[in-house]
Image (cartoon, rainbow, N blue to C red; front, side):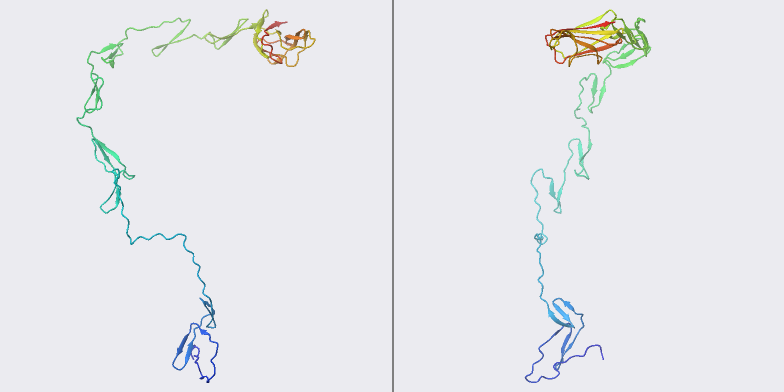
Length: 371
């Protein structure tokens, strides 16, 4: 007995007249139906249960048909490019501009070239592109053509047809000056060290006390004699004089107070701060006296009184013992003195008032060395 299932044959018995066939018919899936003239048989093929497209198979038979799904369709965003018309191409139109460099070659292809030709003495080569740039490859002389260089002094400079410049020999006799031979055009053409110079300065004499003379490779070097090893400061009693190493006065300072002297200066009005620079030779005490309208009043003040706000008297930035001199309540002067001895040196005296003094108020300042 083979593995194929037995064939079923319908009908096995002729149905009786008036009877009905079965109402349920299951369509076989994947099998074979045969009819031999007497009997209809079915040979099944075994498929696993499942869904095949729109058919649902179970027990080797189609038990259900599924509805067909309409596939989704998404049109392209842009229409496709036009296809060439049977492989044909449009013809290239060449411009008739006289400056156009393009043309069609023997195969009808577009080509662009630079056409050159020799002009005069210049020859060009290259195609004028990056691989073969256009360049000058040669130039020849003009042969017997007229030269482009012309001599402005034909009796001195000669120019050949090829443009070669040469110097002509001197037409006259040469001249010797101090052993050097010159031609007629002023060119040095020879000379001798044996020929001594004629004329000019041959010797130089100087006063040895005033100048120092040194020979320097055939020349003469003059310099001042050195008097000091370094700069000196010389005090004369009324001045200090600066002298350099050659004895020359380079600076001096005036207004030095000695033991018998004092300083006095006139001060124009309009100031509220006044600086006065001076110097003293010997150390000692100093008295400062200023006479002039200071521009302010103090009620019922007479003679000397203490300083008020804004009035100062300073020597080198240090305040002095000072007083204001009054006349009927009007400030008309300042008196001050140092409490210690002042060294012999340059000093700065500074007077300050709270407001500018009247422009018309001219004052007199005195600085005196005292005991």
